[in-house]
Amino acid sequence: MVFLYEQVLQRPLGVLSEFARVNRPARLPAVLTAEETQRVLAALKPGTNGLIIRLLYGTGMRLMECLRLRVKDVDFARAQIVVREGKGDKDRVTMLPERLKEELRAHLLRVKLLHDKDVQEGFGRVYLPHALARKYPNADREWPWQWVFPSARRSSDPRSKAIRRHHVHELPVQRAMKEAVLLGKLAKPATCHTLRHSFATHLLEVGYDIRTVQELLGHKDVATTQIYTHVMKKPGLGVRSPLDG
Image: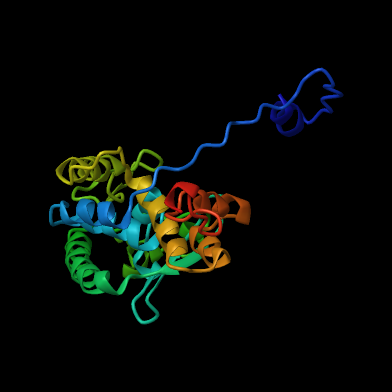
């Protein structure tokens, strides 16, 4: 109601003294232990989906943030990944894990060959955000703007009807994660987003500053990041149970 009146109708809503805003109950995020995470990663099959899932845990990115990466956003020299237009339409920088550098380089070499083939066949254009397509009319065929994880097939863009490659769809990645969780024989459910929670918790457990973790996750308020302190191995100040003496 507040959004309708303020943003759509642009009229004052008035006083709602008899109503109270609904507060969602706080829920602790599902988090894997370091050992459980390694079991899931070890169960992944070789290929693009496995690389994406390893990147999710190694960087703390959300699934769609990872799928929307462009070649120019990966900086091998600085071991950084720039996440564009994340939640809240904010850009941020996260790390590029050293263990994934060579695998990602090899992946991009294959993607470059695919892009070159598309260009030779009269295609190779990619969707550009906002007004960039008008400002830089040829940029959509340039290598830096291509998806890091393009689809295996070209398709018709529903907005422009142009034939081009979209980034890979999230469903195959989610299925690969579900399969790895089953093969890893985990006693708890876990999704791609669970890896983001696990990334944050594991960094805090080994002593990284909560402000650093906040920046890596792209949280606006540190209070959002603090929820991970409640699911660490030693919550609070490492208080011991009285049962343990």
